[in-house]
Image 1 (cartoon, helix red, strand yellow):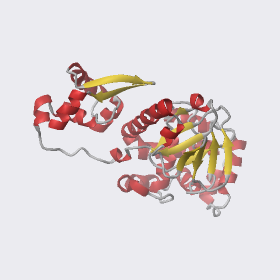
Image 2 (cartoon, rainbow, N blue to C red):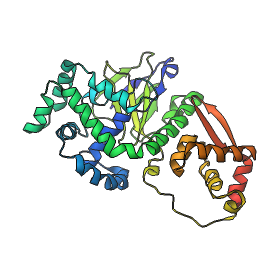
Image 3 (cartoon, rainbow, N blue to C red):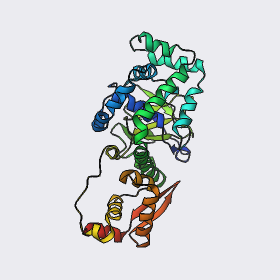
Length: 324
């Protein structure tokens, strides 16, 4: 079990982030069969044909070889987000900028307990430009596997952040961790995580970076060179493969129009325009126009939560959806 001791100043210092390369590497492990698929079977089955097109790339093969369900994995390959709103190019640039000595030390540690890699994989790992080669493999996996779904993926992650950040700010650690995972719990000022090992860390006022993820379960990054990071599965990951099947028209559709009726149904929980846009596969401008009409009609309201603007149904909107 891992224990993270939380002090009085750690709530103020804690933050949330999105780690695109964490998702890329986790998704690669799933489609390559290196990690348990869990609830993501529909997405994995859809993505495997695309993976087969890049599976022979030496850098991709090296990344897959290094991926494992337990034990250390090279930190520079999947750096925790140093700040919110990091982009894939920014994270890839950080991988490419890793000093070769540091990269070699981390790869050597990663290889402990794994079988001897074949000559092609060893050629990548021993190359003088190894960080560049692995970054190129991550970029290939990103463009092939995740870039087509990134709008939906990011909307899932952002919606979860809004939910968890609100609970952390309003009610503290116990509420923020409630329902996060069966592997994580709050106990008398300590975050406990059911991860192999017996280690205790103290945040010491540095806070914790909480990173929702779609393609993996609970994970911790507690190396001294990185921000202390807790990764956990985001809520609502099924939106990644669910399709909005055509439904029969009802009274609410006829009253306000099909798109506005669907927006009202989706706003059973607060949501951002980004999430709604991704969910309905519509442009942000189109979603914004419909929300403006609903807001002027008193059916939805909006409020700011950190950097995000959340829309939610009003009591009148609840009545309309219930009647429809």
